[in-house]
Amino acid sequence: MIWSPWLLGIIYFLVRSKQPLVLDFFYQTESGYTLAESHNYYVFYSIYIIVLLLVFTVGNRSFCHHACWINLFMVIARVIRNSFKWPALQLEVTANNCLDCKKCNEKCPQSLDVNGMVKGNQLENYECILCGQCADNCPKNVISYTFK
Image (tube, rainbow, N blue to C red):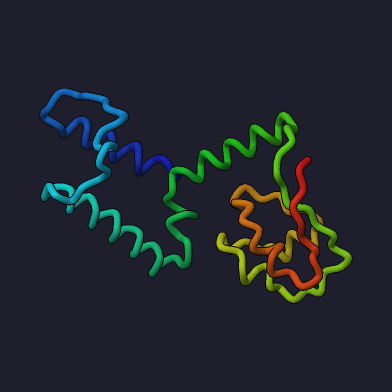
């Protein structure tokens, strides 16, 4: 679902283009993306408006949750890692020390129900970016990093 609008947009612009297709992975990387050309303003402000509309209609970090194509790569990588049981940085929980203060929920930038995951004794969530805000703000150190 997340990739559909991106892929459809790319296909639309490729079909609509009158010029031959040239794939340049390093296009404008030597000087960055510039707004010196007028057509770049349309792209810039279109993306800016889409992000703002999502924020004001759906909520905080809504672009990350609903439209970011990079999130899909993170989910796929975590599924592969879990399937092969490869060791990785993870969050570990000791639920019996939890005060149920829910500071972890308040500080989570992904708006996850960390407290519910702590109560379930499982912090594995595909949308977790392992930022550690929940661990840093826990008064009883219920959540900690581990590599396993």
